[in-house]
Length: 159
Image (cartoon, rainbow, N blue to C red; front, side):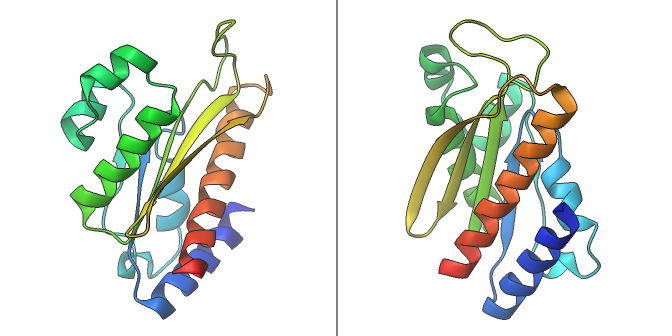
């Protein structure tokens, strides 16, 4: 499914002259890979960020360490700062961010399958949390990738 999503994002963004970027944690670059698997993607996608560690989030995206301390990496607050930081660093029109617990494991407060997303455009930044459940690491990552691509596509259609 991601190939079709990525092709539609590319066509829509190209037609509107938009650029996109992504900041990924638990997906480890799957969104960037889906986009760059499509020939011609360099017209809309210059760079993405895989920021798996908290240090990477702060150094590459400008996530505030105080936000990480207060809310943890898997939070809408961090997803917001990741998306905004990626959009600024890439000078892109649209940025999506993903941070979550793919599994195995998790905790009572942050269970396996919880993923936080951020979407940043010139209109502002929105965040959301999706509870995919304990589907297994590969499935949570795949569902997260598909969801992030849908967020990018919806934003491209609205801009």
